[in-house]
Every structure is written in structure tokens, then in C-alpha cells.
Amino acid sequence: MVVTQTLEDRIAALREETPGCAHVAHFNHAGSSLSPQPVLDAVIGHVTLEATIGGYEAAAAASDRLNAVYDSIARLLNAAPDEIALVENATRGWDMAVYAIPFVPGDRVLTTQSEYASNLVALLQIATRRGIEIEVVPSDANGQISLDALGTALDRPVKAVFIAHMPTNGGLVQPAEEIGAIVRQRQPDAWYVLDACQTAGQVPLDVERLQCDVLSATSRKYLRGPRGAGFVYVRRSRIETMEPPLLDLHAADLISATDYAIRPDARRFENWESYVAGRLGLGAAVDYALDLGLDMIWERVRRQADLLRSRLDAIDGVTVHDAGLVRGGIVTFSRAGIRAEEIKEALAGERVNVSLSNIYRTYLDPEQDALGRFVRASVHYVTTDEEIDRLAGIVGALQP
Ligand SMILES: *Cc1c(COP(=O)(O)O)cnc(C)c1O
View 1 (tube, protein in one colour):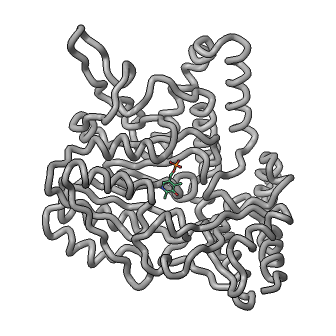
View 2: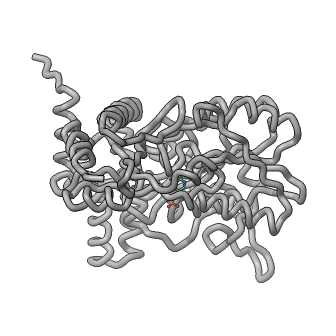
View 3: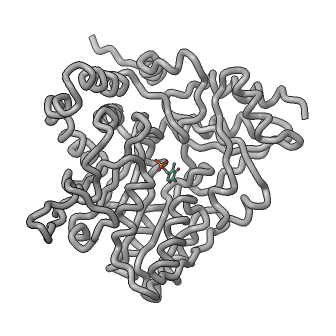
């Protein structure tokens, strides 16, 4: 007899395996998701082992599993394990790679209106220190990067192109593969840096198809891993041209009293000291996502996000703000006459978690600037139709 499990049964089982689902309706997966039990077991198990036998001894005992974390991330990205560095978070991974790009004064770099604030801060600092020129490629009528404008901008030499695959403040998913193809065609040597912080664990990622040189991501968002962990991928052919902005005895070997040699692999971007339990949790989270399948996850996330958008759209005075031809798990909305903060409070009172989309994260997007703050409700595959109805019901019942 063949027993087929329906998707609903499968989601119910996945929720069963996520302790937080019993306590909150979580619409903040883009902030920090709820970890499933295998991730919690990996983290708590290792912390317990450290307390029992000692931190260094626990790391030695876990060395095979720690090495396997690189293999898991490499599989997630279709990369090689020596192209992966494990770091504290997405921003630091992005920084370690981007500050190591051999910029010279006058280099042009391209970014988008939806650049992440931390990345923009870093680019501004690099502009001041090293004389690069930042150009913002405008969005098209759909709200995604204008591929025409990108093509035109790439007619002249460009050192690097920076794209946030899915910006933090809305459902937009940028056409990252098309961008990669245009960059490679027009400026084959340009660096293509993809911030995949919101798409890792949500969207299938393949660095060969993306044709990116650098890809950064965090553990705690759509991958559902612990906080305080992240990774950066750097293409092998680029690694040895990059001098990390910071070095230690793990990133480089001291070979004499006056000489050191930087590691040849991506671990030159790492720290010696690290949150070992967090790395193991990240590895468990990546394995969990790979077991489920990124195609299934991406399809389910889009379905739940579209359902939420349609429920919100049906409420008087509610506007859904997500731009883009392809929209992922982040849903942003506002309701006329009620401040986003009040909506968040009302939902929190019913144990429905959302966050706010802040304009300070972007500044390069004039439309967001004018509109102010939105509620950001981000779904994942564990989000149920019933939770979506609950959120929409609470928002609909608020009195302006
Ligand atoms: C959250 C986020 C980041 C930063 O991730 P951290 O792990 O907090 O450093 C970067 N880019 C985007 C698009 C994000 O949403």
C-alpha cells in the first residue's frame, strides 16, 4: 500500500517539530525565524557538551560535524566547501569580502534603490577612504532593478555590482540570474556581489547560474538557524586576489617573526574564535532545508505570501506595498488612519508577531521615503491559512 502524505499533513508535522508554533503566530521569519527541533538539538547539545567536557574538547569531538557544515552550505549554493567562510552574520561576511575587493580610486560601483543600510554604510565608507564612485541604478515600473538601466550603466567600466536579492523591506525578489548574465556579458571582470540574506533558505540558489562572485547570508532568517551565525561564499578564482581587512592566526599563518601567509581558501575571511554551537545549528538548519527541498519551500512560501496579500487587500483602507514581478515571503502593508506601530501592538496582544519596515533601512528609495513605516508580516512554509486569517481578522477589526 502506498501512503501519500498531503502537503497539509506534512506542514502539520513540520509545525509539530517547531516548538514556537505552539506559542505564537509568527510572521517575522524575515527578522528571525522559529527554529525546528533538530536545530535546537544541535545548538543545545553542543552547549551542554561544552559545559560537560570543556569548550576545546567539545569542538574536537564535533570536528567532523563542524567540517560537514561547509559541505552542507556548499550543497545549498552549488559551490565548493573551500569557497565558504563561516562568520557571525550576513553583514560581517559581506564586509569581509567587499572590503577585500581591490578597489582603486575612481572605480565605479553600482547598487540599487533597495540596498541594505549596513551595506550602504560600508560602501559610503569605502567611497570616502578609497575613492570609489557609487551609482544607484533606478528601479523600473515593477519596482525591481531596471535591467535596461543596468545594461546602460555597464556600457562603461564598472568594478562591482551590489544587489540585495530580496530587500529587507518588502516582497520584491530581484532577477538575480538575469543580472548576473548582463554583468558577465557587458563587464566580464566586474565583481557581482549578491546579498542573499533573505533568500537563503527561501529561494533555490545556485552560484553557477547566478554567476556571482560573492554571496552572503545569515542563519536566523529563512534558514531557521540560530542567531549569531552566517556565511559568505567567495568564488575560488577571486579568493587569492582578496586581502581580508582583518587577519588573525586562523586567517593567516605566522611563518617567521616578520612574515605571514594568508590562507588560500575562503576561511581567510573567518575568525579563529567562534560560536561553535551556532555553527552546528546553522549546519543542521541547512540540512533541514535541503531535506525539505528548496523548490517545495519556495513554492509554499509564495503561496502563503500571496494568500496573505489577498486577505489584506480585501480589508477596507489597507494597502499592500510589495513591489516586483516576483514576490517572496515578505508582505508589507499599511492601513489608512492607523499607525504601523499600533497595528504591531494590536497583533502582539494576540500573540501574532510582525515587525516594521523602516525607511531608515533604505533612503535610496524615494517612494518609501514618502510613505513612512509599514507593517512587515513575513511568512514561511510553516505559516498556515488559519494564521493568515487570524492576522487579517485582527487588522480588519481595528478601528481607525
Ligand atoms: C537582515 C539583512 C541583512 C543583515 O543580516 P545580518 O545577519 O543581520 O547581518 C543584510 N541584507 C538583507 C537584505 C537583510 O534582510
